[in-house]
Structure formats: structure tokens, C-alpha cells
Image 1 (cartoon, rainbow, N blue to C red):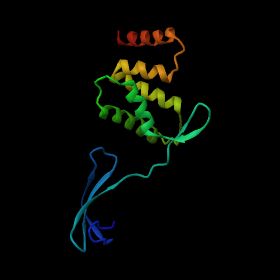
Image 2 (image 1 turned 30 degrees about the horizontal axis):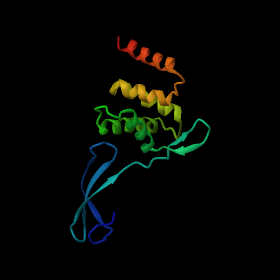
Image 3 (image 1 turned 135 degrees about the vertical axis):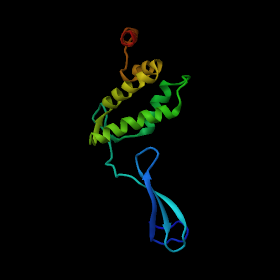
Image 4 (image 1 turned 90 degrees about the vertical axis):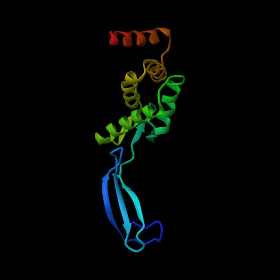
Amino acid sequence: MRCPKCGCEESKVVDSRPSESHDAIRRRRECVRCGTRFTTYERREDMPLLVVKKDGRKETFNRQKVMRGLVAATVKRDIPIESLDALIDSIENELRDKGQTEVSSQEIGKMVLQRLVDIDKVAYVRFASVYRDFKDIDEFSEELKSIMEEQS
């Protein structure tokens, strides 16, 4: 690891511990030449996660796309952005832990809905209306009924 101050490629590890999010190892290093201390993070190298769209096209998993959908569903709801970020983290981690390299967009939508229903029911219905492409008010009404039955 190259020192950010003098460029020396030799350093020693002074301290090592998991990062706050537990997705990396945080290492405090000290340059053997100038004594500067700096922090590095060691993360596992992940294979790209591919999303298979309805029409068969494949694209890399894009957190921002999922976040845009969640933000649209939670407009004017009191839901912290950190909760949405954690929701996306949990989905991505679950997929990577399964060792999947390809996942359908429908599966991602289901995973979002499973988590969103516990966070906010209104946001759940908003997201579901786009994800499930409700054709009429009856489909929308059926979804509302199923949520109300689950609460009972």
C-alpha cells in the first residue's frame, strides 16, 4: 500500500478491525519511511450482479435505479433515506450471499416489496402499483385488502 504523503510502498499494519458496516476490514497503517498513519479498507471482490429484464436484456445491478423507485414510492412519507439505503444493502447482500450472479428484475421487485411492507404500507402500495403494473382499480383494491388482512 502506497503512503499518501511520501509514496513509499512499505507500511506496517498498526490496527485491524471490521468496518462499522461489517462489509470491509479497516486497517490503520504506518509508513515505514515517514511515519505517516493512514487508513485502508479491504473488501471482498464481488462478481458483477446482472439483472435480467422482462425482455431478456441483461444489465448490471444499479443501486440508484432501485433507490429512485423507492424514493418515488416514499414521497411525502416520513422515511429516512438511511432506511432505504439499508433496504437496498440487505437485498444486495442477500443476493451476493446466495452466490447469484444473475437475478430477474421481478425477483428484485419481490425482495423490495417484502422489506417495504414492514417499513411503510403506503409506500408498499405505491411501489407495488408500479412493480405489479395494476391494470385497474380492482387490482389495486385487492392488494389493499390483502395488506389489511395480514394486519388483522
